[in-house]
Length: 174
Image (cartoon, rainbow, N blue to C red; front, top):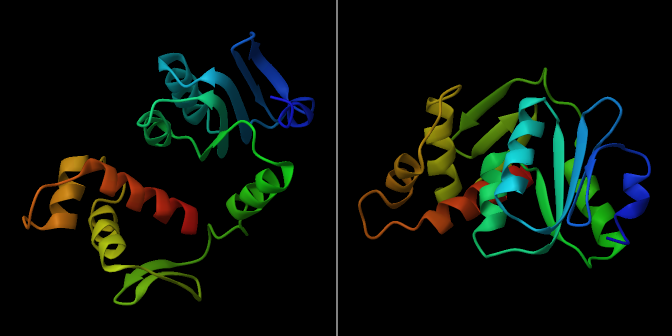
């Protein structure tokens, strides 16, 4: 946790143990979770932080089973990074996550992609199909089965991991 310690010194620590440290910025817009292993407790903390309206939740971990980071994204984590990364890598990831405020910009889905104000985000066909379902169900919970159906359109076996990867890419780009 050596790289993360300087960040934690500027946060309000909510809980601290040898295996788990959680802190938030004073305004609670940023939350950082550092853990030895991603487990159910980590999932619970991320959900709790998301419900408290943290805009950005960063999770740093030492070990994780392959599906665990995906579950944290589903719980509301903004980014999951393994410990041992360089500070330069962390800064580049943070800069990619912090975007100019676009809350007042009109958003619409077009044939070429997603438009936010005058900025166009080009989408792959798979991203477009997923985005179409999400767009039509704005404000509603969309189940993976519905996204899988839109992605594969009955053409073969569905893979939840493929849907997760597309959603991960969309979150990163938008």
